[in-house]
Length: 399
Image 1: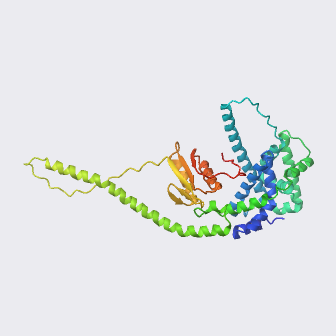
Image 2: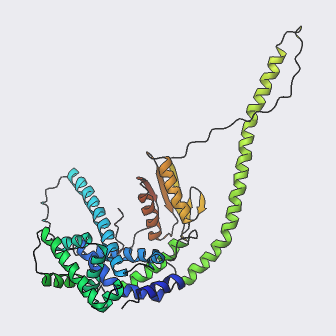
Image 3: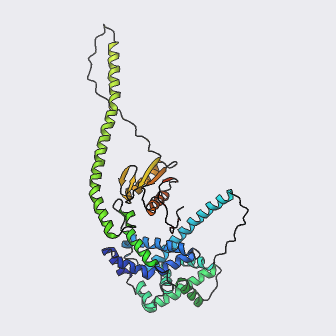
């Protein structure tokens, strides 16, 4: 059964896109239907969550090589991603309700259909089980694996795997009973199989695999991670090569600029030194004639320390047409941009403000990435100056 570890190793060691696509094909039904239950059957939202889960899988693949069951990890990750999405939607709806209350309407509100209570209860009950029991149920019912496959994944014999599944089903049955859901154990097994069964929408696996694969490789070189979601591999490689040539020169320019800034600070102290010399000359001229002239010691110029200027409340982030990011006037790597956002929020906690600009032909997902990262660090004052427009089929869940 379990080629998951081998496929994951091929992806981590050789960046095999075909191995990652096979992983997505094997598990997309589990992830998609888990998300679908959590979001009340909304297909578009379930697809968005599914894509998020597999992007996380691609990025955390090296840490998962020793994980006992990939299906169990995907189930928990899908639960967490769905819960975060639901919380975000609840906050958005609360804001909309507040705005609606400010604009009274004569139109009666449309009735909201009641959600199926079994779906969220079933997932919550599964999440309350120990990891071994939850993995056994996910493998047996959601992924519809044989007892031999379940045993191989959990490092048990086939007979021991069968007993493990039965005990896990009994535990789940008891959890549901305490929550007011009474059903026979056999019927519960059928309900689990039905909940996890069914294919994902046509084409979703290919779309998710391609997006997650490109996202996983776009992390280190300035400007390439945004571009990787939009360009083929050969074009990204060409951009990376160009950036690698530019970065050393850019760093040399930054060092030279720092030296020039130091000289300018020293020059700013010269007027104060000259004023001190003029004052001493006037005081010496005013001394009485009979008084012996003091032996003047050489006047040493004083270094006048200029206090550091307070950090600006407004920072500017510019996303170019090519996908590179300029933070506060400097072309930076993505991790430096994220560090700059964190530092700006920390130094100006009350009035941190970011103006996000873009080129005339900047792709909207590139701009969206910058907006999302700014919101994640807690910066509330965001001004967007961009002609970029969202695609017609792009869900604007970030508002």
